[in-house]
Length: 99
Image 1: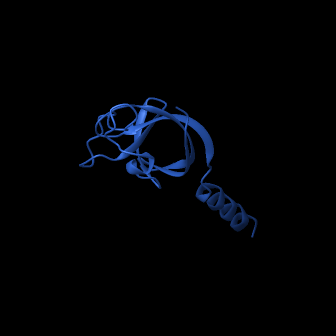
Image 2: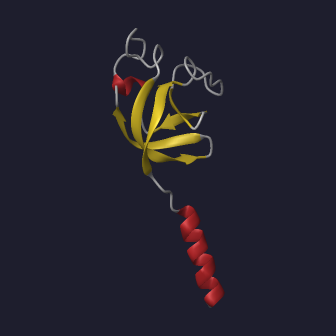
Image 3: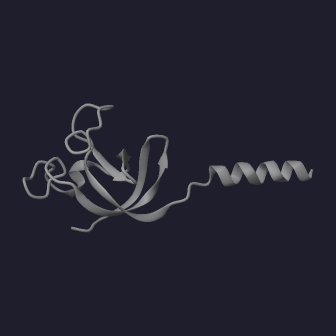
């Protein structure tokens, strides 16, 4: 019985996704971060030197992606995000642009 409880606790702790607020670079994965696993312009973040495509927010949620001053295809912006990594993708639950 003790082993079953330990196994259940281990599975539960592994399956809980920790979400913490962190400051990252946010931009177009293809245009600014050089990601090639998808076609077209898609939102991505870069943290700890590695870029990840984002699920849970769209590149056009923040205005025109091709705006020369603020568009994600033209500029890398700072953002505070909450979410977690799932494989090679970042599952975002909130985004606040800092610039």
